[in-house]
Image 1 (cartoon, rainbow, N blue to C red):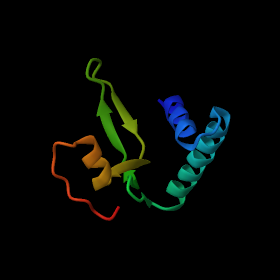
Image 2 (image 1 turned 90 degrees about the horizontal axis):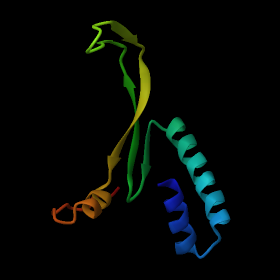
Image 3 (image 1 turned 90 degrees about the vertical axis):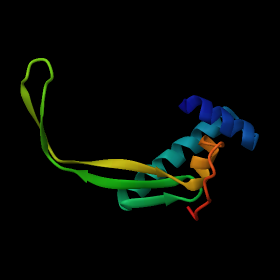
Image 4 (image 1 turned 120 degrees about the vertical axis):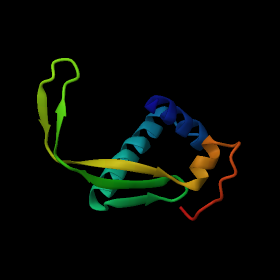
Length: 99
């Protein structure tokens, strides 16, 4: 999937795939840095990445019944913008928001 995105980027910008790969890697790095720095990072027209804290929990293996402790950790949730939701669901009437 990542390669196809790089190919589309190269085609849309009329650049080489090597240049598209370089742009994609820089964009990916900038996105990760931004999400780490800002717990609610918004990409207008695309969506919002939200850092959330997941609490520690105990889970039980369904077959063996053995209990495992899962420590607390941070996760990243994604909330799609109205524009992205409308593109994925063209049959639905989704009003644009200012994402």
